[in-house]
Image: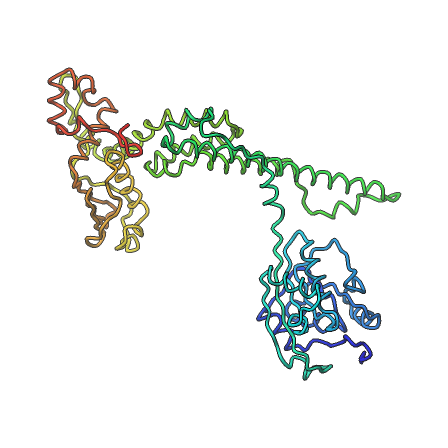
Length: 515
C-alpha cells in the first residue's frame, strides 16, 4: 500500500517507544509533521488519548485517510508550514530522502516559539555521518549547540511494514526559549561612578556598613534601583498590552456583531483578564523584594533576638509602601542607622525581661532602696534560672542529641540568650555539646530540659552575666547611672558590689567594635 511513495516508511511501534526513551505520558499540543497513515499518532494516543495532535501530510491520499479518522490535518508540506500556534512536542519520522530539511524546519519552528519545545526525530544516520552539505553542517552545529541526545539503532526497519536496512539516528533535543530577559537587562543604563565622586548615600551608609564597603554598597543600591525601575516599566507595559488586547477583541465583537446577537464570541477567547488590581499586586511584590535587597538586613537581623527581629520586620514592612528611589533609601537608611544601637540594646533587654518576668511575682515584695536606687533580685538574672517553655510538658520527640533538632521553642530561647551575650562579647559560641538526655553545654551556659516543660539554665560565664545585668539595669534605670558612678563614691561601690568591677568597662559589641 502506497509503495509508489518512495518516502513512505511507517514507524514500527517498538521504534516509537525507543525514540521516546522511556516516556510513558505525553501532554500538551503536539505536531506530527510527516504523519503518513497515522502510526505515530496512534502510538502517541496510547500514552494519552486526550492529547491535542496536529498532523501534516503531503500525500493527498494519506492526508485524506488521516482526516477520515478524525485526525487534525493542518497543512500539506511541512517545509512551507507557518503558524501562530505553540507546540510542546514535535514527534517526527521525516522522509529519509530529505530528513535534514525537515529536522532543520522543526528546529526553526521551535526557535520561533515563545514557549519551550521538545523534538523527537528519526533520521537516516548517513545524514549526520556524511555532512558534505552546508545544511547538514548547520544541522550538526545546532544539535551540538542545543546539547541534543543522539542514539543510533541498527535494523530498525528490517521487520517493519515497509522494510529497509538503513541505520538510523534517534534525536531528542529540547529548545528552551528563555525570553528576552537578558537583552532587556543589558539595556538598563547602569551608571559607572568614579571612586572619588561624591554620593548622597555615603553618610547614610557610613553607620550601616564598614567604611571599605561603602562604595560597593552604593554601586549595588544604584543597580537595584535601576533594576526596579525597569521591572516596573515592563510590568506596566505588559498591563498596557493586555488592556489593548482586551479593547481590540471587544472592538472585533462590535465590528462583527450580527443583528439580534447578544454578547460577543470574542469575550470567551481569554478566560481571565489582567486587571489594574493584578498590576498593583505585582508592583507591590516587586517593591517588597527590592526593599529587602536594598536594605540587605539579613546580617543585622542575625544579631537580634526573635522579638527584636520581629520589631525590625514590622518597621521594614512599613517601608514597603514607600517608592524606591535614592531619596527614600537615604531617609530609611539614616533612620535605621540612628536606631541601630537602640535595636541591639532592645534585643538584650527583650531576653532579660523574658527571663526576669518569671521571677518577678514571686519576689515582687523583695524591694529595697539604696540612696534612691531600687534593687530587686527578681530584676537580676542569677547564675541559675528556671524557665517554663512548653505547657503540657515535653514529649519524646522534643528530645534529640543534636541541638539543631531540639524542640523549636527551646532552641529559639537558648539562641536568644546566646545572641544577647554575643552582643557583649562576640567570641561567645552558639555551638552546643550534648551532655545527656535533654542536656547541652558550651562555654557560656549549660541547660537541661525537664519533662514538665521547664528548662534549667546554669551560666558558666559569670563575668558576662554581670555585664548583661549591668547593661539592662542601667537601661531600665534600676541602678546608678554612668555619670553617678563616675562622680559618686557610694554609687560606684554599689555597682562594684552588685556586679563586679569588670562591668564598668563593658560595652556593646557592634560589628566587631564597641558602640
